[in-house]
Image 1 (cartoon, rainbow, N blue to C red):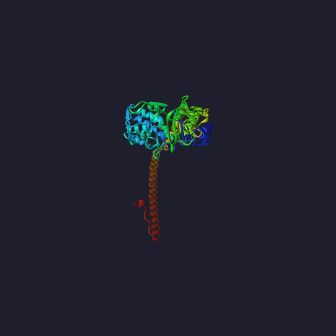
Image 2: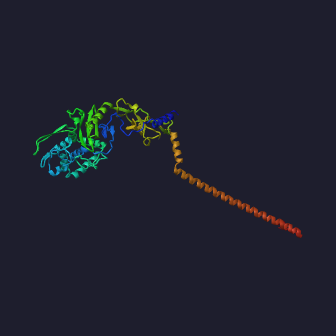
Image 3: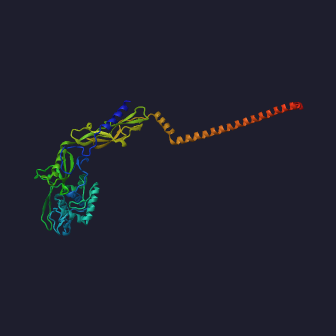
Length: 467
């Protein structure tokens, strides 16, 4: 009875103590962000720390350069290969209002130099030269870009130009930009290029040596309003429609994060894409730590046990210790473990082995799922042979086959009983008929005797006298 009451209390806690799910991030930094879309996520385990409109479609502006660069790298056999620049290709940038690195007709420049110019300075001339050289045409290269985005796991992204100008059909989201960046950073060449502060482009047949610098002012010490010694890469962009955008990474004390800001106001006194990325990163490094949030000894639920004489219920506990990024000071006592109804058993048959997976639980903090864990049996429970045999017999006699056989047997028995009753009825009728005939013959004989007496005739002598 006590175990039953414990089980009921656990169920009540699950249903009435869970805070409502939040549509926003699980961690609220209490910062008034002005960028239209933001995302800060752990590069270690994928935990989303801060998000705002992260799945909202937006113009990516120069962030499209990430897709250009990784598609170019993956489809090039030799990054030191020289490319010949042609005016017909450079004309694709004319009138777009974009900046370049000053490429000239018939200039021969290496792919690696074009990649640095593209990623550090958002050079549109480098983008179109790379696209035409590697894809054969900009249109064909765009197919490679979109295929690359799909490989990265992007589900809400489409590219229609390589220079990042606004187009109603070119869009992405903060979430997809993060996916694309994480995918690209797995490539060592991209990682090195994207995180560089500056790069020297060697002299070409038409130009002297040039030095290009990153447009991510968070990486430049001279820009004290934005500088962050932890920031590394990745890409910036800005158009009237897209607003100011930036993607950057930062690592400290064994923690690594990726920050995305899109749609920061273009008319603000400061570049809020930089300042708000810095705000997110600093708050996270100060307040978010890796903590144990689930322990194997925690009872999350109970399941009823059948066929056992030793225990009526088995405790369900986390399969293993779970650690997760949560606000500093949070422990396993501050999160809620909620069994997933359609994946957690409420009733099992003995024997039950300790450690057997019997369910799954959500781990919730501030009403948001931050992890999941398997639920396992906390102890072994043996089976009662007598109960097992009884259950087997019960299962057999209630099985469809047994019921069919029983119905047939009863039907046959009833048939023979009915047949027997019918035969008995016929015999009784025959006996009654014979008795009836004998009574009629005796009546007639008596009637004849009385008639003879009236007529003065002697009755027929007995047969013994006649003999």
